Amino acid sequence: MSSSSHFEHVLRKIDWRIWFGLVVTFFWITGGIWFVFDSFDANPDQVLTLATIGNFLEGAFAPLAFLWLVLGLFIQQRELAKHSEELRRTTEQSEKQTQAIAATEMNARQETFFKIAENVRHQMGGITGMLYMSGLGPAGSGRYDREQMDEFFRNAANGDDEIFARRFLSMDYLEEGGLPELLYGTEIRHSHCRNFRRTFERLLALAKGCDVDGIIADSMRQTAFGLLYQRMETHLPEVPAQGDNYSATTSSTALSGSGSASA
Image (cartoon, rainbow, N blue to C red; front, side, top):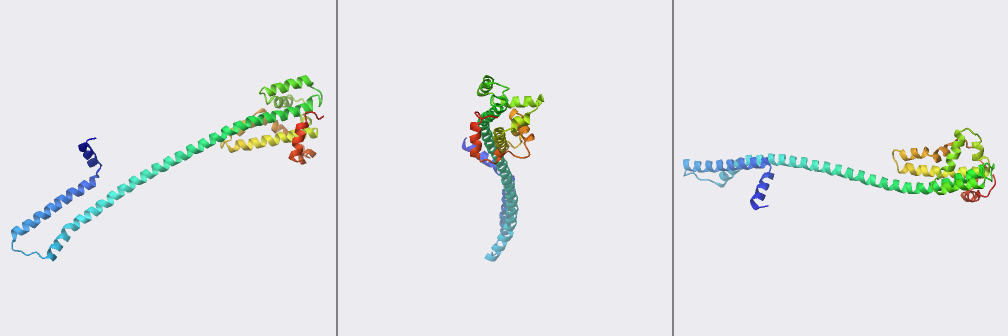
């Protein structure tokens, strides 16, 4: 940018009130100088004392001082308005940044939740498998033999974690009966249901912490695991089994040994 263009740019940025004040000041001083020379022309023999000069200057520049005071107040008001607008924009930008940070944090928490949920699904699939084997496998009623149970577990190992939960739900939908007995008929089954409910409730609480709208938690309740959890809560015995008073260590031992325990 050339010096002339820069000078023009500076002139355009000057407030019109300043230009007004400069013009008025120029004409006022010019008029004052003309008045002084005219007075000397009219009376060249007059003697001016310091008091007279002081009174003249006081009267001459008092209106200019008042004028620039008023202009300064208007200019200051304009600057305050610009500052307020910039502050408002800064506040809006800060709010947007805060919302962006919160959204990023929420996305990170949701990604972490889904990773945890995948492992928990495998865990709940194993618990429902042990519960199904205890009730209907060779160790239970014998409705399914060892080969059939192995086939179910192979499907679960291939990623179908909800296979046993769906089979429990199918029995309930088909009204075959006996679901409360399959869930809580023995101490081992009661222990499996207790572990399943605790695991699902902890996962549900974790989902609520990373989804303010509750969409994830609601979708979990409609999965096979969520529907089976509701059945477990519905058929929960009024008098808890002895296993409910066991420690966490006893529950873990019962879970690991349920594959070989009898119904």
